[in-house]
Amino acid sequence: MHTEYLQPYALAGERPVSWQESRLQYCGRIDRDREDGALMVYPASFVRIRFTGSSIRAVFTNIRSYWTSCMGWLLDGQQYRGDLADEGETVLTLGENLGEGEHELCLFKRMDSCHMALFHGFLLAADGQVLTPEPLPERKMEVFGDSVSAGEVSEAVDYCGQPDPEHNGEYSNSYYSYAWITARKLGAQLHDIAQGGIALQNGEGYFNEPKARGMEWMYDKMQYHPNLCQPKSWDFSLYTPQVVILAFGQNDSHPTDYMAQDYDSEASRHWRAAYSGFLDTLKGIYPDAHFICKTTILEHDKSWDRAIRQVVEEKADARIHYFAYSNNSTGTKGHIRRPEAERMAEELGSYIEQLNETYGFWNF
Image 1 (tube, rainbow, N blue to C red):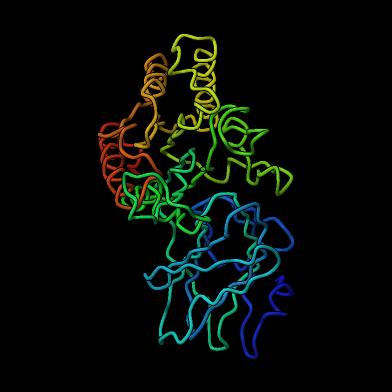
Image 2 (cartoon, one colour):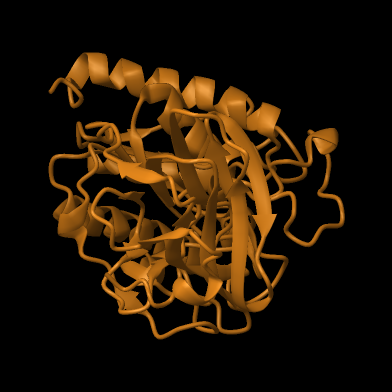
């Protein structure tokens, strides 16, 4: 089962486990239809394995645009990080000298599409066996957002409330994004459709400048970075969330903060119409979902929140909600650090649970 990509890296006695092994568990928009591996693009996407044996390694080919490419994993509840080579193959040692009995490993993408990680499979010790994992939760969330939703610079905990330190991506960790923390608190799966620098519309924001691409272009892609690949569409039938979060409106002020300059300008009215249209598009895909529209605690002009609230109020749809954090738009000058993300997750998670008490979208 396509173990030929693993054989050159297997040590004597190691057992190759292809990315196609049926007992591996995937979550996220991951391209698993390739002939050479499973392509991981989005933050918080993961592959999980339950196994026995004294060691486990993973084989990747990295496809990089910028920053140091870092993967994360949880092994028996302990979190680790490993860096991938800027190009070519990397074999990551995920665990060694493991004790007897069963082990569980979750190998996840820490970063957005500053790189794509082509996962070829695992290498288990000769005495290792792959076991069937517990099923994923029935609760499902999807977040459409920017770098805050991706957990960018979240590990720079000495800079809470402050601008970002100089970095090369090493502080970015989707596990500590408010999005994934919220999902874990609620016992839900997450598809984190988040990209640093992205705005709603093409031509705005920072992603892929000077030919900036927006969320209305990216939202339906499985792989999308123009510098790394040919874009490939996502099959929405593969994942149907009960809760969808729209968390952008931060980078949209670049290069011109037109919403703050003139709330009733043509550009401002056009943005609100585009936001409304994007909601309509997602509603057409997920007609039974509840939508939560918001920004974050990262500093920005409050006119963007006013605009989002106005669109939600004009929709007058019981499934579309506006949410604001207690320190919305004023919480920090830099990216959200882990302690700040945890507070955001407490507020957002409580709000979602309140909605569920009213509407029962998680009453399976």
